[in-house]
Image (cartoon, rainbow, N blue to C red):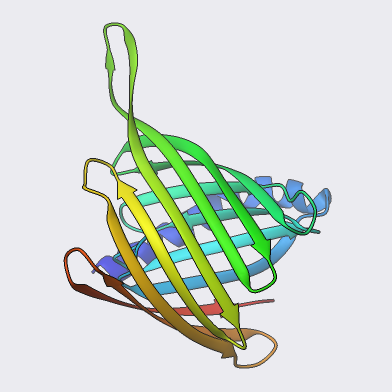
Length: 198
């Protein structure tokens, strides 16, 4: 049932963004890929859809599933630095933050922080830490290894080690299988990602 609901959310999302995307395409943004993620990982525990539009190195990414929707507006600064603004809704709670991705050869470092608010207090907004996500990943020949430190809402910080493997099936489709291990709760996480490029 959740898979059907997630698919319906994606259809509604595409419908809602069709006009602004068309406007962005007139400025040079074009659809780069659509990705479907299933299983459990550090950032998702259910079927999730991502759609990315690109203009050169810059991009707009929309992500949705049954509990969250968010958008990344990414502006690349040269080959190595790729900062982004992130805005979204999680369980009917608005949040926002910034993400910094740095790439050097096979190494990718991701630092992502965001704040949310549960209610409007008498003295104004009461911001709470929504996500703290720090990851180092090494990739080569379709293989990746990673270490992730994650702090989500009021949960205690978690540390994950992981690996993944993937490749292109043809010029339009690709896949990736991932495994991560929570070293504090001894939990195994498995994910599969399917990507379509027009």
